[in-house]
Image (cartoon, rainbow over all chains, first blue to last red; front, side, top):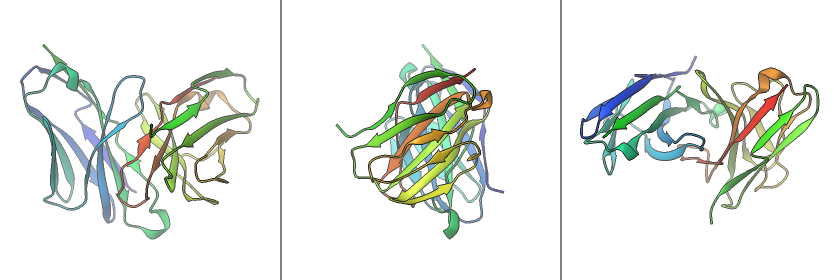
Amino acid sequence: EDQVTQSPEALRLQEGESSSLNCSYTVSGLRGLFWYRQDPGKGPEFLFTLYSAGEEKEKERLKATLTKKESFLHITAPKPEDSATYLCAVQAHRGSTLGRLYFGRGTQLTVWP
Amino acid sequence: EAQVTQNPRYLITVTGKKLTVTCSQNMNHEYMSWYRQDPGLGLRQIYYSMNVEVTDKGDVPEGYKVSRKEKRNFPLILESPSPNQTSLYFCASSPGFIGVEQYFGPGTRLTVT
């Protein structure tokens, strides 16, 4: 069964304190791995798509990386406005269920000044 | 403005009273999907549609119906709502269904008493 596990569930960082969020997955044939950011009371907002092991994507203070079993979202020198829940999702290669997306439960990040 | 809209945004109803949550996108996207988000369980896919007249079940389709008669609209129907369908619902769309990011609506908070 396809599964996505995110850790930690919650993370508190002081402004400027870099860290990483983890997303481990078990899926038979990865089509794509997605990172989203979700602010309270709002819909998720797309951040990155990763397709193959070794791939990296960057956007401002965020950098996403992918291995064969997990992805990391690195946050460098975070600011309070980076506080949000970060969601990871995977899509599998299987033809009959290509449209299925599996989300992890998210990591709630709080950055305090 | 490119967007996914959902209506209503908030709804309180009683058990057994049929309801429809509408979802519309103005980006000419092929793929649309419905999710529910519950504390501790994360986002779970209910149904998705890869094109007009094509719909498929996600992880938690029981108690829900969908239809895709037009490209822009993807309503979620609860024929006989029950309290365990109290949740936050999100509609999403994307320009394709393979490894492509989704754009989420603002969410509909449903309470079934």
